[in-house]
Length: 59
Image (cartoon, rainbow, N blue to C red; front, side, top):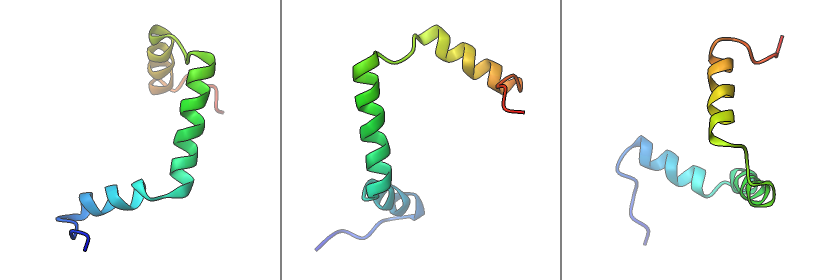
């Protein structure tokens, strides 16, 4: 018999971990990173900073 979740956060983690849709997204992301090498660390943070300043280009 499975142990009951101790709180709402634990319940959410369990539900998410069993989500086929989320698992598919994560698997696809892993494959893409393995194939392309992902983006360089500095480029990632430049994009994060630009987005936080509202420079993400999504007008």
